[in-house]
Structure formats: C-alpha cells, structure tokens
Length: 115
Image (tube, rainbow, N blue to C red; front, side, top):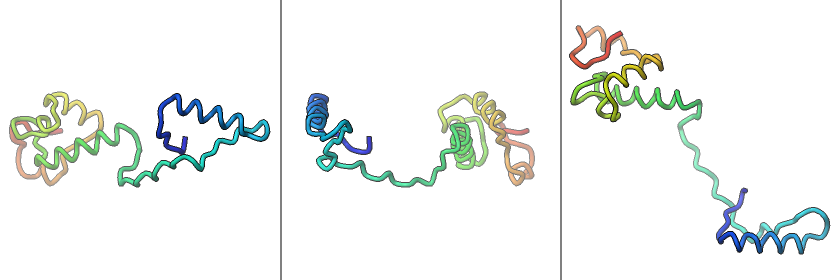
C-alpha cells in the first residue's frame, strides 16, 4: 500500500504471480524495488479534530469576512450558499456567538445574528 501501482489490474496480477513464483520460501517477497513509493504528504496547518470543528472554523471565517452579518445580500449565509435560518441553526449548534466588540456597537442591523 506504500507503493504507487503504475499499471492496470492485469499487470498487477502478473506482478503478484511472479512474486509468488520467485519467493524462496513460504513468505511472499514482492520485488518492491521495481515500484515507485508514494511521495510524502505535505503537512497541512489544519489539524483533523473532527468535522464539526472544521465546519465551525469555516463558518467563523465566513462571518468574520462579512463583519458578522448573517443574512441579507452581503451576509455570511449567502457566502456559504445556505439559508439564513440554517446558518443560525448551525451557529447555535456549534456554539458560535458574536464577539463582544461587535455587540457593543449598538443594536444588530437587520440580518445580523444576536444571542
């Protein structure tokens, strides 16, 4: 599984049959020197903590990009391609709330999320 297979299934079958025939004992020894190894995966900055955490981060980035406006033409819901009510539901479920400095600037505009 650590090697890239460059051919089709028939070539793989022939490779395995040849390995069985050429293996000296009861242990299968495939000539892996003939194969290319998979390149090491590039490390990403995203830690895999779960789908909910990835979804939460994605929603927060969309909200920040839209100054925490949830609905309307310039809202995060439109940016995410979802209904405002669906976004509000996801925000509550993921415990996303507007930062305090956005709440202190007076009442929320129409389409903005308040808790």
